[in-house]
Image (cartoon, rainbow, N blue to C red; front, side, top):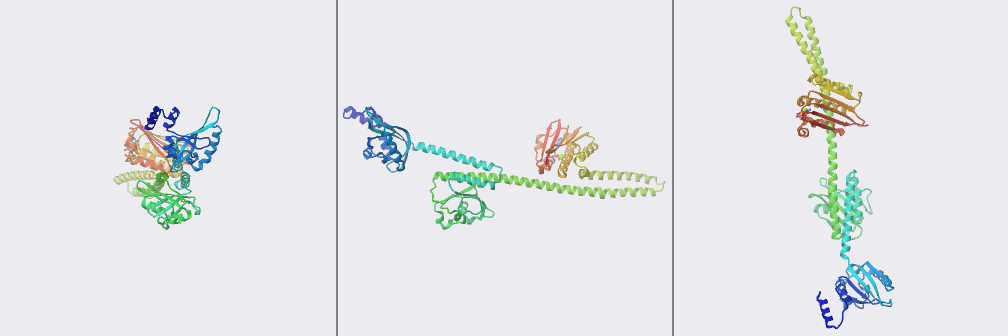
Length: 529
Ligand SMILES: Nc1ncnc2c1ncn2[C@@H]1O[C@H](COP(=O)(O)OP(=O)(O)O)[C@@H](O)[C@H]1O
Ligand SMILES: [Mg+2]
């Protein structure tokens, strides 16, 4: 019991003024309870009302209830009171009051007419509950929800397959909607060139005819943010000569808010917001803009590195394609040289040797025998020359295509190694462009070398299939198999080289292997339909 109610109880014991049970409730209530006469003047004002409004009962009694209403809400209350005097009650009506110092209080009011036995209204009772905190809580939740939605939308924009440059306009629009600032842009800082690129320039009243604009960093207000790494919030920006940059003049802005875009400790730019009116930035708004800036920074960096990765991958592919074509050209040249020059010279040597033998007398038996073995050696050399030049660049590949070249290579492999090699091609007449044919042929050569060197196989089969969207080459042996570690080892230069060969077309190389069950290499190269 509070001392106050205690004293009243004592009072009552004395029997001076008997307090009713109802009055006890009114006094100890946490809600403000206000009683009015039918004429509309305050006649009762409980301790909770004193606390809520900061007005003592003596100060307010006899005044009208409009004294505690927010000015723009009092007409609403007057209308309601009129109805109450006619017998209507209102439950949990939300409105706004002011306290002694004029500070606003959000309240929920229940207003009840009190009638006597004959139905005359003898007073009007208002029960007023402070809901400022509840309302604030609700507003915070709503704001958080809106913020989350904004973050969600921003990620969606960045995750879309469009480039970052294309996405900036949408990002900026989202930020304008989320902050209520009509003018916004993302200023990206190019440190090497000391330039600022404004992306998604939006809402400038005197707008240049483009949404992307480049300016030297020191000719922009963003430079202040970028140089200091600190936010700049300025409510009278045009009054300050130092801030009167070109873009600021276009914007006719009074208020400028700039937050650095930071990635780790690096400043990659600045999120700029501006308003043509001079507006106060609350700590909440400032925090909100800061988190937007952080988010934009992270998203920008992520998308940038994705784009860089993609373009460097493309460059790598182009480079590897180029290197391979240079190597192929060189091989072709060497193959031709060996075949034509060396081959012809050996044939000539053979011819001259046989002419010489013709001139030898029948008695020169020893010399004839020697010449014969020399001629055999020359034959072998001619064959070697043919083999070497064919290995370097099978003319079959250029003249009859991939199917014929693979068929030849399979037969050669069997002939040279004695390991039976089965070959199938489907469809028998397949056309594959020269670059892909070369790549597949070189992969086959490396696969054959590996089988011979490592597999200890007794059987090999090669399959070449052309599907609607791809050519697939499979080389399978029944040897010892490769471990997963070897397959993925970056030191496996041969295997890596095979993979790289099909990179220019986004092709793949799959290796499956089981110990003692052999190895299968499946190469898939996409082709245009
Ligand atoms: N067909 C195969 N059967 C068994 N092991 C293989 C086969 N092909 C490759 N390997 C294993 O994978 C390793 C990597 O192959 P590769 O990159 O071509 O390198 P290299 O042939 O120069 O050793 C080889 O050293 C070998 O151990
Ligand atoms: Mg190898």
